[in-house]
Image 1 (tube, rainbow, N blue to C red):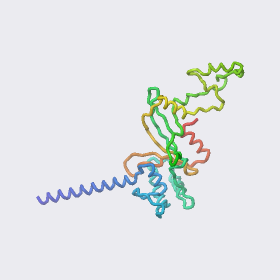
Image 2 (image 1 turned 90 degrees about the vertical axis):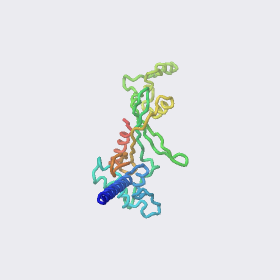
Image 3 (image 1 turned 60 degrees about the vertical axis):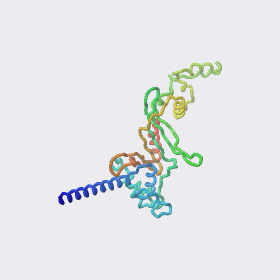
Image 4 (image 1 turned 30 degrees about the vertical axis):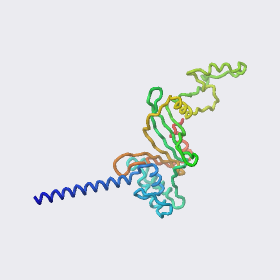
Length: 273
């Protein structure tokens, strides 16, 4: 009887120790995870400790280069890294330089969000991409829609070129421009009668369709962020929801770029021709 009681106590003790150990492991994983975007900024800049407590600016640990290097090593996606170790080290050394350290700023212009959404359009659920930026407003800041990408809009103003292009005769003024009647028709090509360098403002078209009820928001499917905040570099940020320590908002792409590559990359990201 005594032996069986001791066995029960031993089993209970082992089970309790296992539960405590598992709880500690879960806590460590949660602390390692960069759960919020603000936390990514704080860790990148070295403005909080390993338990998520913010440093005061007068604290000697605040933006400490050694601490930043430690944090930066866990702010990258380690499972699918598409860049070399040497590139990673070069980037870390640049942003943590003692002479000219580089910090991220939530209110800066050199980063933006790409929000992949679903809208209802003409009776169908369709993907629509919103490009969001931070801008100053009054005494604070706000997120705003800077641009959009929507497949049905891409051919909405396909301007004709060459000999097939519709045009108004150069003597149309003698007709008091009454021949505009043939230009301004439903399902026609009114864009053919615009300046040679005409570029449609698709964001305005989007806002009009929303206001008129032609487009109805349904949901956000995916979200990521793109940074050009570090001169000569580009990196993207994605949210990884998986077990382990390397989770949350992590850098998934890192590229060293020049001015032309930056321009080309922005066109690609904004889905421009």
